[in-house]
Length: 480
Image: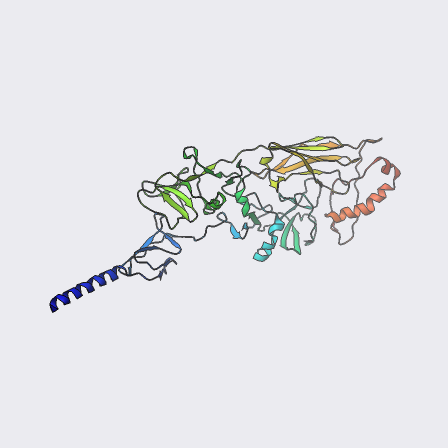
């Protein structure tokens, strides 16, 4: 009887030890080789952050009898958070930016739809990356004009009114360097300096060329394909996310799970279905299943998964719509009307086309920009009106910007001649002396002319009666 009891006791002890061994967990451990952590587990686990193997799949590390198996080789480590900017751009809150290599003006930026300089100039100070080029330049095509904003924004072709510092002579200093809000230096445009190319993140989700409000540009470039939610797989080109930040479109399209253009091939690689390009990064969900029945990529709130059938909604892509915008200016000396054809092909600001009209007829300005009024807006045409200057000869024209290539699109030029009893125009070359401290290539010189030169001309009765004076251009500056 004693032998029998002893045998049962030993058998029970052996079974308990066997179960305890099978349930033994491996303690959390850190990898000094790959910089990841393997959490505690009793069988297998993924790392934090996720380790990706050579096959571009998530790598699991096994645990057996409380002992870790060999550490998998991490060919890469998947970022825990998606980037929100294209490759090569730096994330700074709501802005993506890059600092260009030093070059003459204008600098070369990766995308055209740049932010307005005043919106990001404080970032330049904070990041300590000054001096940088400002989007300001002097037009010297027809004489010497003032330094003007050339960025495609509401500032376009307005005079730069800040305090400008010069080293030595003013002439031939036609571009502007920004150090801080109190120190901007005029320099030759041939000098070599860096520039900041800054982009508003929200521009990634533009739908201007996509045709519908529920579709979005796939990258910062307006030439890019548009992403949208589709329901009929047979007529849909599935979306490809060539760059990681494009996966952020998920939240823009309702946060539903979508099939995307990611497929597993028979040889086990992962490719984008339309271009047949192999993936060069991963965004796998921890819930992904790798086996011989899951072939079709899907995008969820936690990342990519693989599906075994073509179910779900589909995220599709289509080519952006093409537009061929044009500007036509017509009218008389009482009113001018600008017709903008296919306005969707132009850059917009808020809820209207970014378009400006100009004249050289304003008496005390080399170039005057009008505030024009929209009178009629349709899908295909926008109409704007403005009134030319009475009794002053001059030219009128308008300019806008192509959304795809940022090219300046100009209207025809309308010219009016002031007709009075004597219709001939006379041109005089005036030599105007200016006081030290006055910049002769700024609006300060126009104030001097308006205060002293025009009143002198008005004293000549014949000129006052039959002619209107206006400044046509600055020919040259003598700084000696």
